[in-house]
Amino acid sequence: MISDVLVTPLKIIDTVGGNVMHAMKDNDIGYAGFGEAYFSIIGFNAIKAWKRHKEMTLNIVVPHGEIKFVLFDDRVKENCIFQEVLLSKNNYSRLTVPPMIWLGFQGIFPDNSILLNIADINHNPEEVDKKNIKEVNYNWEVF
Image (tube, rainbow, N blue to C red; front, side):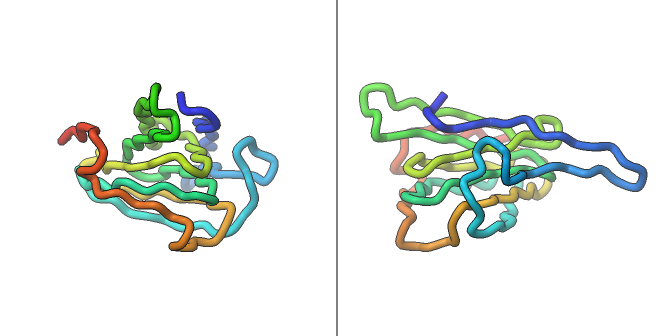
């Protein structure tokens, strides 16, 4: 596990007419404040990689579909490993990604998947680092 990356199981409450799916409360571990919340959609086998926020803490939930997240910390040269996390309704959890951790993700559900990010600051393109997918030696599987 990468230091300070958290995977927190969340509750799904069965109710008549449809479920309630928790995402985040201000007293949850991983909550670092509120700047913005947004949804992102990713198609089957599509890959969005690589991005690293210098200041933003991400809190990601997948309420629909299934997404594989891949993280790494290149500041630890002698022990740089990939951490994989699958999020879906079957593994309903929140992924907390602190600043300076690289992140990529892939849709692995046979339809579109949706993620919700609850970020502690507003998006600012100046605080984001990006790499081309081919710059990182990670073997993305085709499902």
